Image 1: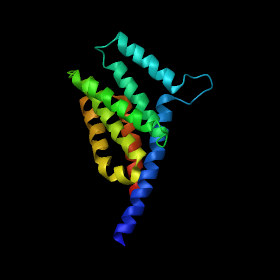
Image 2: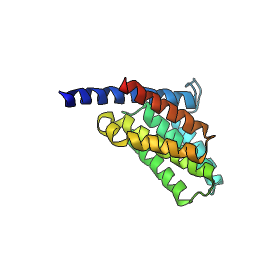
Image 3: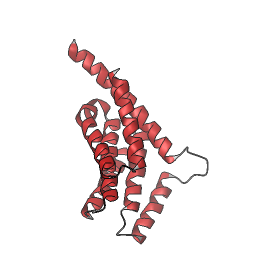
Image 4: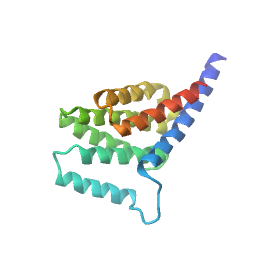
Length: 168
């Protein structure tokens, strides 16, 4: 009986988390408008920027955010897994640069939190219990490193609201 209640709560939490993550992405990226560049166009523009600034973390971080946001809003899309893997590669590139600045380390921790959020959204029942603490820990780490990281604040707030809604 207790495990059935726990399974129902886990499912409810995961569905709420998916909805909240989708809201966060829409909030962060703005509303889709007619004439707005496609995902492929946006990604290509960021890849060109990365090629022009190979030693910069910014374009890599922006690519990962774009990819993870897409995964969170389209978790069942055929490209979701590919985009998740590409975001992970971007994070690996950032890690390989061995960022020293607290702001860069904060962005990397924020990306890890967003990555775990995307993993949860793609498979809430399996990944929710497995990754929710890691997502929260990475958002906390991002804000400890840089309390002014607005994206980390927003993602953490939305994630925590989803958690609170689940426990009520």
